[in-house]
Length: 379
Ligand SMILES: *Cc1c(COP(=O)(O)O)cnc(C)c1O
Image 1 (tube, rainbow, N blue to C red):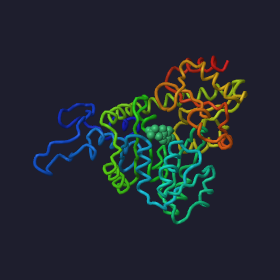
Image 2 (cartoon, protein in one colour):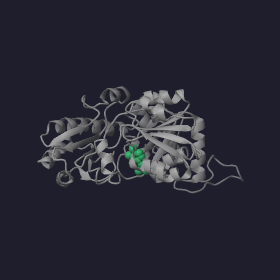
Image 3 (cartoon, rainbow, N blue to C red):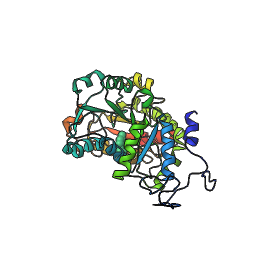
Image 4 (spheres, rainbow, N blue to C red):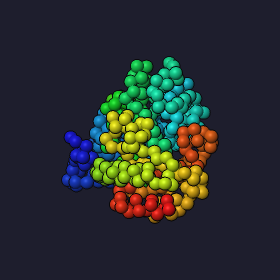
C-alpha cells in the first residue's frame, strides 16, 4: 500500500457492529462481559479502547513498524520509553533537543538515577566517545528545533547497532510522510501527534511506533500500568487528521520552500535555516532521508535585536504568534523569548539561536497571501 492509501485505509475497517465507515468514538470506560472473563477482547478502557486500537494500527503502518502505542501527549510517550530503563542506565541524546524532552530526561529521570549525555550528532562518530556498557538508549531528533539541523539517522543507528544500543527518533518535525526512521535502522519512533499527525491544532496526543512486537508489549504494559492514555475522542481526531496528512504536509513543504527562497533574498534578513536550501549544511542528508524538506523555516534579522524580531511578529496577520507547530494555519514564534527562554544566552548563541531568530510553522494557506504577509511585516 502506498502512503496516500495507508493514511486512509491502514488499520481502518468499517465498524463491525454497525458498518459505520468512520471509526466511532467509543466513549466508554468498561465493556459488558458475557460471563466473568468471557469478553470480546475489551475489559476496561485504560487497557484497551477500540478507537485507540484503530489509531495504533494505522500509526504502525505509517511508520512501517510492528506496532504503535498511544499516550496522552508526546511527553507521556517519551516518559513511557524512559520507564523501560533502570536507574544507573545512560542515554545519549542530541544536544539540540525539544525543551520538554530535555526537561523530562534531566529533571524527572535525572533525579531518579538516569544519566543523560547531550552531544552534537552533526558528526555521528562523536557519539562513540560517550558510549559505555551502561548506555541503553540513543535519542535522535531531526530536523531539530528551532535551528532545523539535520542528523544522519542511518549513520547514528549503525553505530548504535554495533554497540547493541536501542535507538529512538523523535520524528515530530518531519512526520511519517517525510521520513520513516525504522526503515533507516531505528528501533522506535516517537511522535507528538499534537503537531503534524493531528494537524489541526485541536488535540494534545503522543505515540511510539516500534520496530518489533516485544518492545511494543513492554510499552503496552506501561501504558496500562501507569495509565497516561489518550481519550477516545482525541484518538478519533488524530485518526481524522491523518487522513489528509500527505496533502497537508506536501502543501506546507511547498509553501515553506517558497518562503525560504523569498527570505533568502530579503535585505532585512540575515540567515535562513531551511534544509531544502542547497546552502544548508544538512541538505544532502535531508535529501537522502526525507521526502521533502518540511514546513518549518527559521531566520534571523540583520538588526539582531529582540525589538526588531518583536516588530516583525507584531505585524504579521496570517502568521499568528503562538507556540506549537504542524497545524493547517501558519504560526510565527520568537524562540529566544518563548520556547527557549530558559536556555542561557551564551548557550543558545552557540547553536545560532540569536536574539532576532524567528521560527515559522508554515501552514497550507495560499502562498501569495503568506508571502504578502511576510513582505509587509519585514517592511
Ligand atoms: C511538541 C513536541 C514534543 C512534546 O509533545 P507534546 O504532545 O507537547 O507532549 C516532543 N518533541 C517535539 C519535537 C515536539 O515538537
